[in-house]
Image (cartoon, rainbow, N blue to C red; front, side):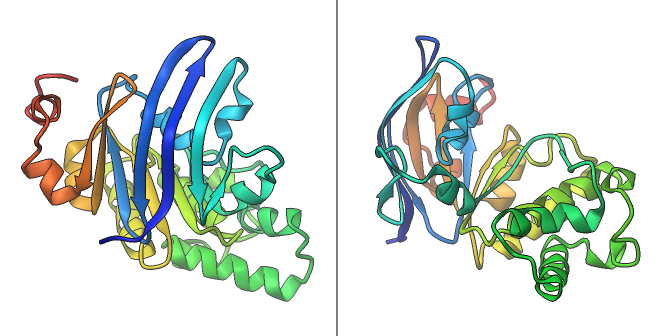
Length: 252
């Protein structure tokens, strides 16, 4: 039995009255890669953003239910949302490097959280760029603007930036959708390596990618949790007709 890192209980999310997530109850296993799959508009990104309360930043959103991380309900009144988000690195679909140097992109998070020691910052920058598979490509030009990197390098920089605040969980929203095949492979390889340390939850619309990466799969359809379980079972022997139809390409 896999140990859950995130436990979701009867999670409901409404956007301006539109019910986008409906009574989601789910355990996400620790130090595994969980793929969230389903047709466009089914609630995949909403689920991901509910896990670190990024949905709070959208006007007109209401959420109910529980999301337990390390036993703490992040929707409880009085919870320190900043501390919750520090536990979670978030990587968006499109690379969004900060308008500063490569070095300062990585050092930004630790500085925000109070780190001022230059030696420690140097070590953090190198460690995170190594973990993102980017160090060998940029170590001689850390003071150059991040905007000079290729799109694929920028996305790996964003991965390194997410790691710099020492999260427990990585939330990835279709992190390779804007990348070429080679850059996508780099990101996939890093995620596989990083699951030894982090719990990874990623949204993907590419079934081949889910088959390559996922240890656990969650299938959503029109805001409902249809099926979830070990990737091998869900992707090869699904029990629910709607999952079967999606995997056959009959619904998209």
